[in-house]
Structures are given as structure tokens and as C-alpha cells.
Amino acid sequence: MTLEKITIKVIVMANKQKVWDYYTLPEHIIKWNFADTSWHCPTATNDLNVGGRYLARMEAKDGSFGFDFDAVYTKIDKGQNFTYEFGGRYATVDFKETGGQTEVTITFDPETENSIELQRNGWQAILNNFKKYSETN
Image 1: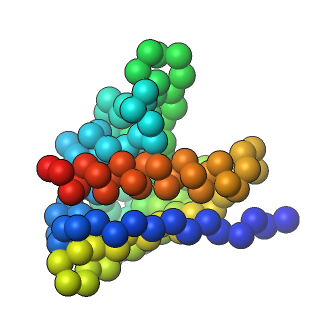
Image 2: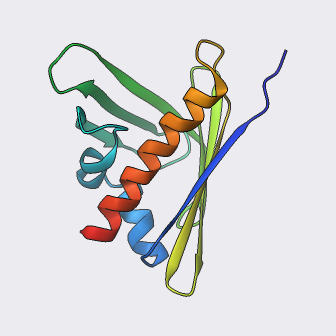
């Protein structure tokens, strides 16, 4: 059984170039890539090329749990969108600017361990954290 893809989005009050940079540059990724303030992203690397690797360490600040989000880029249209594969699943991130603000849309394949709602809420919380970081820095 193939599960339906999940789509989340946010509108960031910033131009597309800034939003793209804040989403893809490791020095920014480590500032927003977590769903809750009890977590953090201590390290991130990003080789933004087809076949390049994206790796972000996500962990609880108290050290009780952590994991590496490890993905490989399969398609990139710099400044517009990209797709990556992670563990046999795919995600596409699109950036569209209108009037000085940028809509970021992520469509991803769900996994089967957690509910669709939990996955949607988790990814949306990270994207909301990205929006907050991008608009205040």
C-alpha cells in the first residue's frame, strides 16, 4: 500500500533569495531545524548538488534522544525547488515569491511508523520554526 503524500506550507515575510539561503545554508539550518524548543540541531552539512548529501543532527537538549536526518539530492533547480531522497522516501521543497513574501511548500512521502497527523504536525512545526527564524533574523 502506498500512502498519499503529505503537503505542508508557510508564507515567510521575506524575499525568495533570503528564504532560499536561510533554508539551505548550514549556518542557518542549525538555528531553526527542530520542532520544539527542547530540541536543537547542533550540526548540519549541505552539499546542494544532485547526488550531494544533506545531513542534520537533531537531538533533545537534555541528550535523551537524537537522530541524523540524512538525505541525498535527486533534483535541484537552484533558487526554485529541490527534491531529496531519505531512506527510500522523497521530499520536494518549492519556493515561490509574490510581492516580497515567499511561500515554502514541502511535499513528502510519509513513513508507516507514526500517524499521518503526527508526521504532518512535526514537519509543520519545523517549518513554522523556520518562518519565525527567517522573519526575525
